[in-house]
Length: 113
Image (cartoon, rainbow, N blue to C red):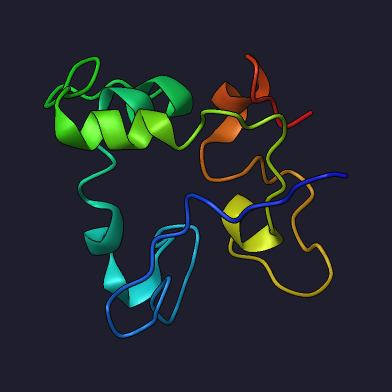
């Protein structure tokens, strides 16, 4: 029997996973990156997103990175909702949209295609 689990879902103490007013420029809406600010500088996130940053280089190590890395253990496939891919709702308006990370996410083991 197949097993399914929900993982990698950050929820604030008051029950919100994102803020209002999401857009291409503001993926988390008015909440900004506060909910995931611990995750973005980790080595795990930098490696999965392909975005090295001058401030963190290849990413930070430590407890946050160990926790971030553990979220992928035992995962065979990731099923993501449309909201994780982009801010659109309803019919696709922009067929050129390549997702939050752009074309860099098209290669590697967790490919969009």
